[in-house]
Image (cartoon, rainbow, N blue to C red; front, side, top):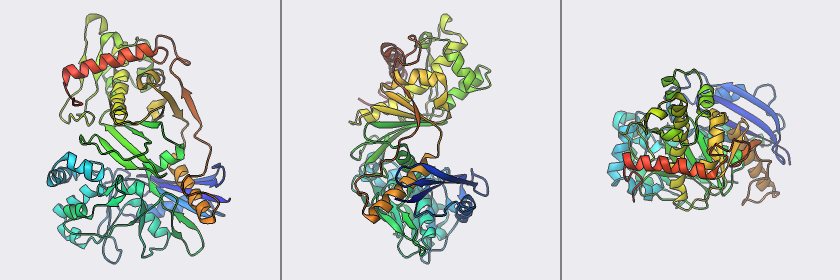
Length: 488
């Protein structure tokens, strides 16, 4: 069918993959860092274009017929009535809008009101909270703001030559805090609640729709946020969940419908394939491992993993509730971590190391159980993040999660997802693909871990009953320390 490209403009760099449109085979790749500090909270969007240009040098895009764009989520690009930048873009890692987010929650009547309205409770990263912050701290800039875009919207608009039509997709729109994945519609009243006045919002395209075609004939697909692009690049489908192991953690799963969660623990995203990606986040994941390694005087997580595997399931009764930075799931923002079950025989380094891994994974299982409790099926769990390669994580995860665990090989999945979307839009435009399903590219190369496969029988992965016992021990401790944390 041809050649397509996917570009991922993350917080610190641009990656481009050029793929065969029929098979997804990667033909060429490009990379360029963004200028400036990748941890900056304000960014001139032109740096994204400069990085894109550098990544595409050397004829990288020669012969490409369609491009998909993935970009960092939760950014806000405020533009005036002429399309000029009002101020530098506010990006996702900007936490200054925490108070603004809390104000918005109260203004609409609480967490449940927001969950029912748009499927999520405002957080500091979301555009709706950034609009409120802008209105409170920079009222003149807020007043000038006439059009609101996110990073991927802005990049698509630039690639198309800044046309009168501005677009986004349902995946990125679902992260704004003013578009509902359940109804598929904007809530302009929430924009006005945040900004103080109405603003023009981009048209929300369907998964296989094109945003437009450049004068040179290059088709630009709808684009999407990084999370949704990565899900498309991994080839996720119903029954699949992704556990992301960063300093904090998250569990997201593909589901057939949007979930409104009165507790606010579930963020109801739409995906880039026409289904939904409910997400539950935790405040603590790998940070609990790093803290334990430092406490034990270890220099690496590899050493902590090796030490943990010298212990036995249940860590001789030690249980770590890893709420080191408070916790989002359950909603315990002021909690601290708890180490329970100290006895003379359990006070050994290997048991503490083991408790750290079990605590991290059990906390993520708590998050997964929130989704399962709402009818989300989880048959496969994709483990992402550098910590997914640790032997202790791989040994414990299958039985604790109660599912097959897949550890994909490192790849530019967001860029691959953007390319797959481009191939889909190109095929639909040519009449060779259906708008109801993306092209059937080969899935991610991965290591597959089954409970009991390739691990010692003393490990939870080798004995499902032992894994269940570890889980029960953790839940009993959590309920004792934080009774009713997950409600009735």
